[in-house]
Structure formats: C-alpha cells, structure tokens
Image (cartoon, rainbow, N blue to C red; front, side):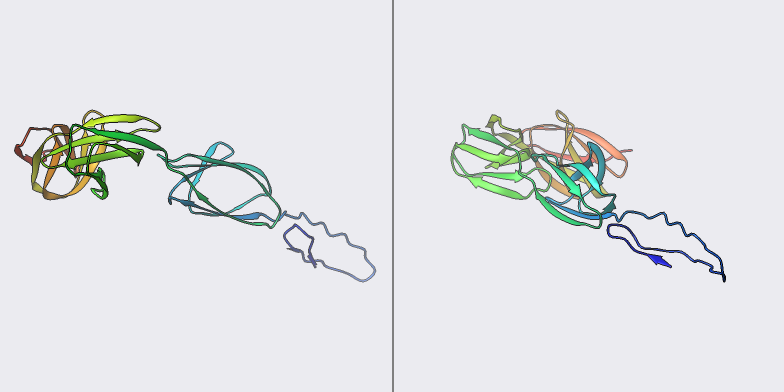
Length: 231
C-alpha cells in the first residue's frame, strides 16, 4: 500500500491480508523538506542560519519547513539580513547582491598622474590627475605616481590624507613559486607574486613568505634590494 498526503513524503508499506482477518497498518509520515537555493554577489559570501555559521554561497540544500533568520556577510560589504518562512515542499530561490563599504582618500602634495592599484592583485582601479578626494571601496591599495608611491588602507566612512613617498625595488631570487608580501604594520597581505621577479614597493618594512620560507626586509629610497627566501 502507498499512502500519500499533501505536504508529506509518500510512504509504501507491505500489508499481508488473510482471509477473514482484519489488519491495521501504521504509517509514520515525514513532512516534505523545502529546497533552498542561495547565491551572492560577490560569490563566496558566508551564510549564517539563525545567527550560526552555516554555509558559503552558492548554496543548494534541503531544510525542514519553518521560520529562519538568514544573514549574508562578506568582508568589506554591508551585511544583509532577512527572515524567511519555508513551506513544505517549497522551492526557495534568492540572490543577494551586497553593497560595498566605501571610504575616501585625499592625495596630498602631488600634481602628476597617480595610478591607484588593488594592492593584492596589482589591478589598476583608476587614475587621477591632480589632488582631489577619491572615493573607493574599503581595502588595501597601492598608489603610484612617477617614482613615488604609497600603501593605503581605505576604511569605512573615513577620509584619509595620503602623501606619496619614494619607492624601492625588491628583487626576489633563488626561489620559484608564489610569494605573499605582508605589510609589517598591518600584518596584511598586500601582494601575491610569482618568484623570481622584481617588485616596486613604497619605502617601509615588509615580510615575504613562500613555500614555508620567510624573510623580513626594509625597502629603502630608490634602492634595489636582492632578496632570497630562507627557511
């Protein structure tokens, strides 16, 4: 026998019927789960379910029907919160487009072209021609103008005055592979490069890591420094 009921999964149960007998069949039905599909822009947002870490988007899961609190978070973006009510057998599909936090930098005492690059990827974000306020998403940036540069962290709703300083060249040798470059002040990764290579960096102190090796360097003004990663 098969028993079907709205909002529940069907269930089959064998029943043996003999002449002249009355038998009773018992069914323990399971309520139909809801199918939930969640995506995010940018990809990879963390999804919290009822204030507990759950999954990373995109998500394609089954959940018991009921009420849930969803929170979608991604570093540098405004989190989004929503309440959903999942019905038995429901197919719930939602895409969340998160909005970036923004901050402002003011380039000081430099009147030539300044290139603003994403510090991690070295991708050009924009170029500016004169001192002015520049609104950027929060994050780390490298500013380059002529032979000068600066490393700046754009912070949420803050205005930061930036002055370009002299740069130096770091030449990574005797190592082949990926190298992370960390700013010693913030201990954040500012660049990822493939060694061997030459890199222009603002004057300052940095840590280079790759393949279980690490070294700390000081970049000097208009100097070229040869670096070998050590164990």
